[in-house]
Amino acid sequence: MHLVLARGTAGAVGLTTVPDDGAPPGPAESLPAARLAGEVGRREDGSVRWVWDDTNRWYPALLTDGVRVERAHDLRLAHAILRSSAFAVGTDLARAPRGPWDGLAPTPPGPSPALLAHAGARPEALFDLGEMTADGERPASGGEELEPVSELRAQLDAVSGSTEPGRLRLLLAAESAGALVAAEIHHAGLPWRTDVHDAILTEALGPRPRPGARPERLEELVRRIREALDAPPTLNPDSHPDLLKAMEYAGVGARSLRKWELEKLDHPVIAPLLEYKSLYRLYTANGWAWLDTWVRDGRFRMEYVVGGVVTGRWASSGGGALQLPKNVRRAVVADPGWRLVVADAAQLEPRVLAGLARDERMAAAGRSADGQGTDLYAGIVASGAVETREHAKVGMLGAMYGGTTGASAQVLPRLAKAFPAAIDLVERAARAGERGEVVTTWLGRSSPPPGEAWAQVQGLAFEEGSGADAASRARSQTRAWGRFTRNFVVQGTAAEWALCWLASIRRRLWELGETADPGQAPEPFARRPHLVYFLHDEVVVHAPAALADVVADEVRAAATEAGRLLFGSFPVQFPLSVAVVDSYADAKG
DNA sequence: ATTGAGAGCGCG
DNA sequence: AAAGCGCGCTCTCAAT
Image (spheres, rainbow, N blue to C red):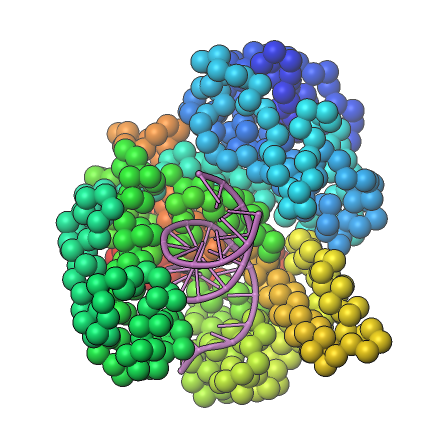
């Protein structure tokens, strides 16, 4: 059963029951926003699916009131998928003209709407629609109203009228579960020890400088750089043109300032410069300013953007949540009496490719009798396809990314011979992209069409009297789009596996129940293990110490479940490396 | 003052 | 070793 939440008038909330069997919706009930959390908590029984326009518009307020829901349907996210899915092309939803549900901007997980509503501060602002769209069009803000009940009907019809209702149903459920997870991670926050982070910074950079000044260690390196280049004190190492000029004058012979280019050169400036760049990065991207901005009360509150990447991966906004450098992960420390369970999926993308392509031999290469799986690249070596693990790895990466040079291209023919189904699948995706066609993930997320600029460049190449450069530009653009679609099917399906994994972990953790003593985590997680981080193929669970080992087992079971959800009985395994640690840095990365 | 680009590096 | 996929962030510098 679906329970649809909608904005009512004067801060009221409308609640409508929509049966699963296509029967007409019940009458809309109206209740004051202040009573919403209580009402949701009362009706939540683990089987209802809560439907709302945007998870971040509703769920943070519920969490603040300690209410967690088991299942949701995020209409904004679902609409975006259904609108372009190749599985749903013939449906009314896909054929309808652009409407208020198209191009809705995600709501940031900001201050809690319910709290604002209680405080009486601009309650209508709680329901403001997002502003921008990719093409600059303004979606319905004001004029057109979002009508969640009829939109749900349209979406359910689109799913059942699609060519793959089962897969789309799973995709929408997984995407929405992901939205719940993202909101919960924001709510709980990643445990972050400011004192440890500060110690890391002080050790590397020296004490925190006064505003506008460079840290001691950086200042010292700048002196050495100027000295090695015989440059004046006006040389600004943060200005690339400035620095390159000085290096040219000193005869260093650098064509760029990229780390791996500099590493090939032999000159006294190289060592201090490389060290400067590395420390400068730490200082600017994850230094004291970052700490001030993003860590409050011992928690880093990430702002994930679910479905923010075309492939279906999550993006993030602010804080660089998906780029936490390894050297600051020491600051991620479990609360006293709690542990971190860190798990990452081993060789996720090639395994997903094996499932996608139904490549029995590649699946076998990553499989072990105990069901836990074995190193896929080692298995490829054992199959005799290539000589070394490194060859297997760069070969597979090249196949999935479209690499055309070096060792990766060299071993590709041998992989193609040993695993024809897998390699053929990515090659076909690449050729489809080169023709300007759309490709689709296993569960039904379709790639965007190439776009106007693409067609223009292609058109120019065939025009009368167009030069060789126009033709080569078109050719290189064609290949680039082929690499994109080649990767899209793999990366996108891996993202679907990860969503299913997350959803399963989330449900299993909740089912583990409560411990006796509350920890420092906010309700509803004070006595429960909960997700605190997600990074494409990796999760961190914050768990009461006594539950850490059983949590590790559940996370493994969830990976197996995700594999089954996507690929049924096809025998591809998804092994994890799991560590129970106090600090994130102690999990082997 | 604000905006957009390019360069570079962090993560998977 | 530094090609090939997807991102976000911070910096400088030129354009507005």
